[in-house]
View 1 (tube, rainbow, N blue to C red):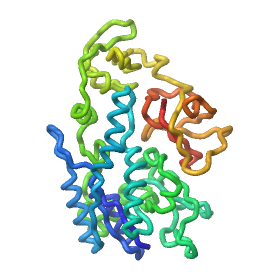
View 2 (cartoon, one colour):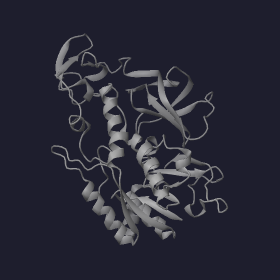
View 3 (tube, rainbow, N blue to C red):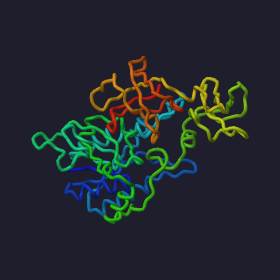
View 4 (cartoon, rainbow, N blue to C red):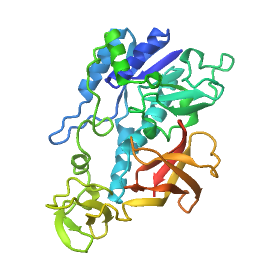
Length: 369
C-alpha cells in the first residue's frame, strides 16, 4: 500500500515508518507544521523536529513532505482551547488535535495527495470487525482487494498499558480508523520500540519523548495562555469563606489542583471550585470535600466510534489520561449523557473528557459538562 506516515521527529513515528517500509509498503513521511510561534522564554521546537523527521526519511530512503497546517491548527485547536479556558473549563488540546488535525485534515490531505492509508506512532491498536484474533490488523491484509476499502475498524488499548494513548483518540471516527495504521500499539514496552529504532539505525533512537502542549513544545499551559488572554488578580477563598491569598487569574486553575496556589503553611489546599464571575478560586484542606468527589455528572458532545452501544450495560470509564478506570452506568440527560459511577472519583473537571471502554475496546466518550 501507499502509506503516508505522520513523522513528528520522535522515535515512535520513526519506528512506524521503518516497520512499514520493512513490510514492503510504499512509504512517504509527512511532517505536519502545526505551530511555529516562539513564546517569551520558550522557543518552538518545530525546526528541530522537522530536521529530525527529515533525517529519518533520508536514512530510510523514503519520500518526505511537509504539510503546513498552522492556520487550521490555530482555528481548530488553539482557539478552542482558549475559549474553553475563558469559560472556566479545562480542555484537552491533544484530543481536539487528533480529531481535527491528525485524523481529519492530515488524513484528507494525504488521500488527496495519493495515499491509500495513513499511519501514526500512537500507542493504540486498530482491529477489524472481521478479525477473530486479539491482535491488531495486519497492514498487508487491511484492504479488501475487490473494493479497495477496509472492514469496519475498532479502536483498542495498546499492549503497552503504561503508554496507551486511546484516551486522546476517542473522538476519531470509524471511517478515519479504517484508513489508519498504528503498528506501535502491538509492542508491550517502550524498550522494544527503542531497541527497534537502534536496530534500524534511526537518528531518533535516543531522542526523549516530547512534553507539553501538542506540537507547541515544553511551554506550560499558564505561560501559553498568558499570551492570548487577559487576566487580573483575584482572591483565593477557603472553606470558611475567608480570603487566604491572591491568584493571577481564576482561568489558570483547575479542579483538584494542589500545587501552585501560593498558600499553605499547614495542611495542603485543593481547588474545589472556581467562580469566574467573581474571579475567585475556592480551596479546601479537606480532601473529602464533596465538590472534589463525584458519583454523578453529565457529559456533552458525546461521540461514538461506531454504533451507539447498549447503554443499559455497565462500562469502564476513564476521566483523565493514565487514571485508573471506574465502572459506570449511563442515562440520557439534558446535555447528552448522565454518567453514574459505582464509586466516587476525585477531581472530575469540566472541559476534560470521559472515555468509555468495553474492556480494551474504546466505544467513545464525551466532554464533562
